[in-house]
Amino acid sequence: MSKFWSPLVAGLVPYVPGEQPKVENLVKLNTNENPFPPSPRAVAAMQAAVGESLRLYPDPESELLKQTIADYYQVQTDQVFVGNGSDEVLAHIFYGLFQHGEPVLFPDISYSFYPVYCGLYNIESRTVPLTDEFQIDPADYRGPNGGIIFPNPNAPTGLYLPLAQVEELVAANPERVVVIDEAYVDFGGETAIALVDRFPNLLVTQTLSKSRSLAGMRVGFAVGHPDLIEALQRVKNSFNSYPLDRVAQAGAVAAFEDEAYFRETCDAVMAERERVAEGLAELGFEVLPSRANFVFARHPGHAGADLAQALRARNVIVRHFNKPRISEFLRITIGAVEQNDALLSALREVL
Ligand code: PMP
Image (cartoon, rainbow, N blue to C red; front, side):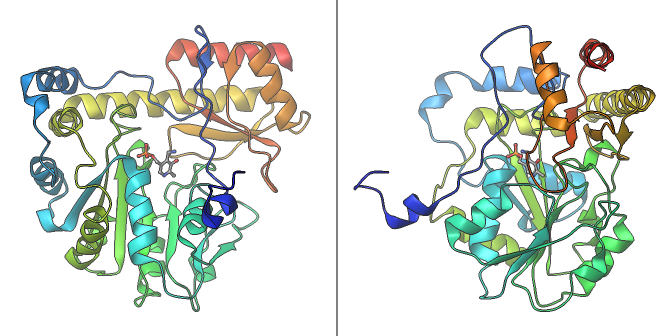
């Protein structure tokens, strides 16, 4: 606290990202990064982008990237917005599309950045409890609200809401923007982008951080009706005209062009997810059915915090949330085969 702080800054409760430890040889399964490197084509494109041209500003509108994403999902370029990670895209959504004097709705167990944006932009919110099975029930998202947002698959549970139910929820709230945060959708979910042409209130966000292994480049995007996209453009161009640098734009375009690598690496992560889930179940864990690149699991005989600490002592880091309803759970990112083996054998030792 300092006398130079604005009252707003003094009242902020910032998001706390998962630890990025400086120690080597850790089995790092705490921030849902992809164990595979980015596509070799993306790496080559980024390397080629490093040179003389960096003295010039990047394309402020990332036109080539927007066109690439539009072609990939068979929408128009004016239905695509890109930003510096989907976190930035989400920030602009909260600022530009969610202020209505009625509470924005999101699940009680969900991405913990949502309440942070509400605090930053002074937006009222109300959390909607997941069912006892940790599911989202579309019937709970009726009545007055200033907008709705949830991840699908949800984080940190990994549970996926089928598209028909997403559609039901979007159709029931025609006067409000409904945002589906699909950060993890490529690991076995079906994207709601297929619905955007029918629902002008639907906005879908995605990221290249997880399924395209580019967390270090910070590229995210939103797809929806051109009117929603224009709102985001207006916020972006009132904040930072150049959110994506030249290297990020080049890498992101090439990542979308390498479909074979994308498929292969997503399939490998999903296969490992099933193996890890089985291994955990054999050790007595209850594992929620995940469609993401992580699993959410609890052990009936051991407290979540104790397990996380015991793993840490064995150089394995996973994420533990000290929050109501989920304090017994561990969120474990699916790593490479050896990392997953290390996790399972460390757990065997602990238990
Ligand atoms: N949404 C969800 C549900 C996430 O878990 C994350 C990753 N922390 C993000 C959005 C943001 O990802 P990024 O900013 O790397 O695109």
